[in-house]
Length: 511
Image 1 (tube, rainbow, N blue to C red):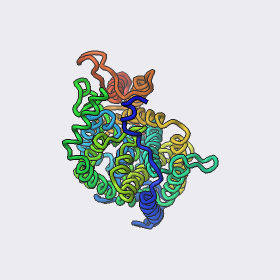
Image 2: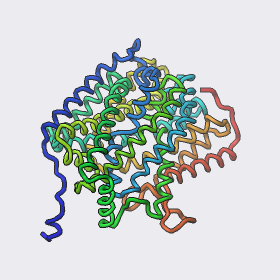
Image 3: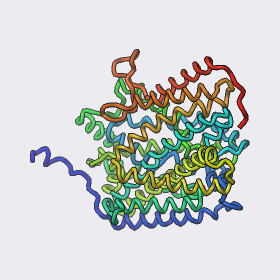
Image 4: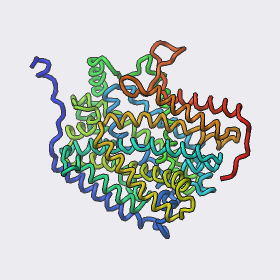
């Protein structure tokens, strides 16, 4: 062993932490009980209706919507991945902040119109809105398929957040017969059962607990950790020195990173509320004004996100080395806090996985039920039949995500989520343009979607795996890259316009 190797700090290795485990189990049990009793919260006449099971009766007010949308938009993986990216590359990882600032004017302008259309016509999904506007089953189907496919790896990423917590508790690697990672399997089976029982009311109720816990954890961390490490000046100084030593990353953006940073933020903002889970939260609101109020209030989470991102720098200042960047937040709490508060933080992150995973599975189940089952298998299905199909589908979606994360490498789920963002962005023209103009028609939007979907996938797929950025073929300094999702969206729109101009106008049959 060389002297340098001997002096290097050891890689953080979690051990069984009984106080942390006890606190974690207490809060996990609490939210499990809340999940099952949620069926009686704001109790409807029946949950055997997709409006009640899948959208909470479309009756959530400002505060419930704030917690629900915040809960499924700012996820456990956000708490794990954003600090991990900042820990790895520095300032570039902060692109999530402008992204979650830009998104809310978009929400304020667009989402109330989508809500109004859904409410008036009893639509449940984006596919319903597209079919109602254009009368095209193929366009409806591709929007629904894109939503489901893009959501699956997103659910798997919530499992990665839960997996990081289980590892920090010292419970990883526990198997029971053929069941790998037994604690993770148990956690998400419990989630599956209370979601099946209570529908959207379960994550809506649990979101209150999750968000309050996350706020407590982050506020305590950003006050206590710098005090232990010599202040924020010392935190930035140590992080900057580590980046300089590593020869990558930094506290400020490099010259060629500015365009990439800006386009990642813009593209992510446009895609964020195209996902089924965020639209589910929007459609569950009780009025368009509730959505506008939330567009004003939800930026409070952006402030929280900025503080969470700072944990990546604090990991450097604490001298923590981890086997994988996703371990940095659990390692920070394990190293600098007592066992009981570390357990509280792990519980907040774990519960932060349950809320979005539940809403995501409900959103995907709604799409399958309304835009495949009802459209192609049983057009005469009753509302109770829709609810039954959606409940069963939500179970299948969760099991599928669980199998992905247990039996496939973590990087595979991360790669798929990257493609998911590019794919879901291609549904924006079909879903949003029709709110403002009747000029676009289904054939053009369908061909545009296909071009955007295929070209985005092709550009993202490289010899070293998937990548989010594409070098500019012309203009700009050498090495300037742009988010692939925006390039694909631009191609999508151009092709939709050209096809729309080239094809004759036909009457749309009302859906």
